[in-house]
Length: 187
Image 1 (tube, rainbow, N blue to C red):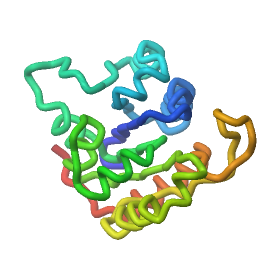
Image 2: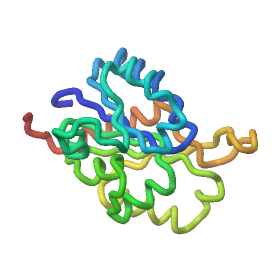
Image 3: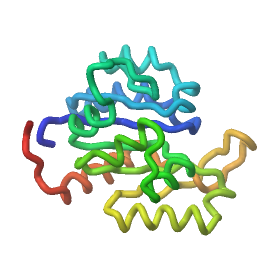
Image 4: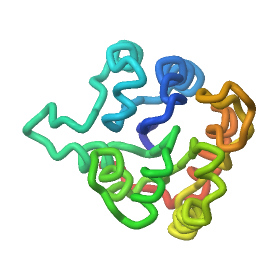
């Protein structure tokens, strides 16, 4: 990466609860600068304070914490890589259709950095043709979509398709995305 800046975006799936541990691992393994942006729903599922303590930076949410900047531009320009994990069906649908009505989607729409999206859907959502079409649209538009896997459903406790990929798989996809991306000019 040019500057080693990774933006981790989380949306409202229970998998976002992994962020504090992921942040520790990413910083230790790769010595990256890490920022985190959460949707409003995600901020209810994970401790913003824990993430901030690990990353030593404020967590960006839907609120404007610094009136002197435009958050989606600040984050989009700063990032060398954007990883959206977990990405809900709602988030995927909005990005596939260019709807940027919250901070995470606005960042994805405004960055020139490679974007890796790791969906986390219910089995029922995953079967919907509209959801499959949205994933295809994202891939056609150049986003890297990491396939979901079989995992334990928080609702039923049973194994089902649609779980977010594991961190290793997401990192492998991220490396591939960085290799394919045109080299960015340092600012």
